[in-house]
Length: 327
Image (cartoon, rainbow, N blue to C red; front, side, top):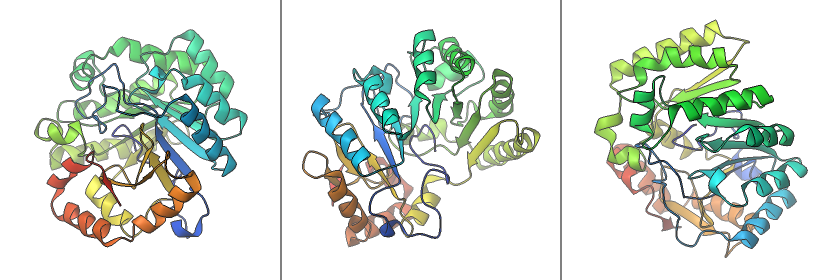
């Protein structure tokens, strides 16, 4: 879903009658392009803000892009860290669009000015997704440490004015969940294409700050009621998508129905899924085609099944999500 990032929607992954093992290549690549970020968000899944050791270099990035195109993978989502801080960001985006690969970018918006908005529009992105976790500067900047609320909203306006499909991602917490309805109203008034939200994921800094962030059951019930009301109100006018399940419910499903997608992190490791620590290989050691086969086999390995069941029973183990384990 969303900014506990790269949780694809049903439109973005294989939830059809096909099994993920039936595919010769993934349908979707979720690529965390870098780990550096200008913000220090309380809920960051990747605990971003610094350069990850041994990130892919320019030639390795180029090779990965070529492999994606060669395998005819139809859809890529780029995030970070903050992806726009990557020196080759626009070059990568241009490559994918020239190869008719559908592309979404997930960004905090702080580096989008008129020129960047124009370039996004010219490239014809599937969407640009901006993280806006509050209707007021106070709530937004409490969540997004070092963030600038007005700069973020201005990025949304510039993208909309340029004709870019612009989405807002909103992560609910104890201190902003009451602003959900006002957030949706603001999004509609701004001309936003889609509003995405769902339960906060207990990974990375969110796991560390769980008691400070996690809404109560009553707050979530009110939250989903508001979302249902707004969805009816704006049907056909603005897409309002909310993922109703928490990370444990998702893992329970994924254990039996893995997505036809790969999650690639900045150093080239390929994870099975964000909430689990398992890595099935690295782009420096295996081709993308080989990694897809390793991914399919990894989900059936006893240590993956056993640990996933342990996480389902004990969500505290989600704290290990960023401690990589090769399978």
